[in-house]
Length: 468
Image (cartoon, rainbow, N blue to C red; front, side):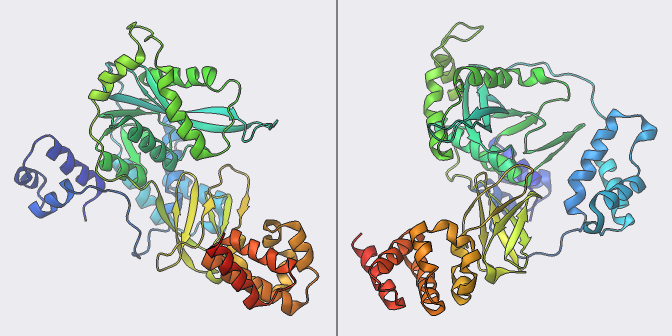
């Protein structure tokens, strides 16, 4: 299997008019391989299959790269040696770091061999139609009408320097998943793909260290899928993305004062896409023409959208603990289910969701993704119903109580063990068949009529599902 850079080379040459035979000869690959990739319409990451073990150093590689990147700012004799990197990893990660010194030494040698000399030149800036700039801003928002507490969120801005048109999307963070999700939504809205996109070095899609660019794999797949050229700004060259920074400020002053009320991510982002063109009636700051008129020139320069949309998630294998919970992003814990305790699961991570899967690829539940550096524990009580029905004594301390109506909880607390067990078993089975909300309604109805036998609850649920 070819890596994404080789695949991108084939796709790029084919789009430039090279014949399949010429591409195969130039890149020294089989014609069938070239034909396979140039006609491939979907480069989304496939659901992962079991592969060999990765290097135990993989979780620490981003940290090592960051340390070596910081070395460029200090004197040569104060820079990290392989031995110093090894010592710092031991000191900062303790028992979690189990690699040998030779493993660290080989990786640092590899990094330094790959890093070319840095360039000191600057780019002559000329913004052609169809070129875009991308960056994040931060804004305060309210979640609901009447809220008095503001929350800080990110907003991804895509601007077109030729016309000064800008579109935006709200997100809880700045990860690669957020970038890919937002770009796809905006490009679908405007009906095309920019030929070249300039990113800030701080976005979550990757890092530029000197002249070496390391993309997150999710973004690299997205880039090949949509066929655009991505460029990082040079260090200390903010003018290379001055247009998007100006639009970030414009949107903060004109759209986000007073703080907007989001209520939901999907609703807020749909509204943002609809609102953006209403801001394009103003004249361009230099050309004098309306932004909307200039944007039509930008639009004509866009590349066509691919046939299939991209699936903006990455897959990660995780190990659950004794409660069936797993950790992501160092601080955030999510439930899978007690029956999946101490097992390896595949998790799909998106901008807004985290979905754990069974080993056969069946979704277990769907969590809202958490962000920030404060520990969070996200539990879906539906995943604990069957285990709870076998241990009804745990009901008084279970997370399920907080998801049931208070009068129903009060009544269930009065039941004998066997009656409570039957109610919880019925709640679990009805949830699987008809959903959690209908299961609660059926149980409430059964309790009100004092008919709490397991078959009675199932019959009531079936009737409610058939005649809502």
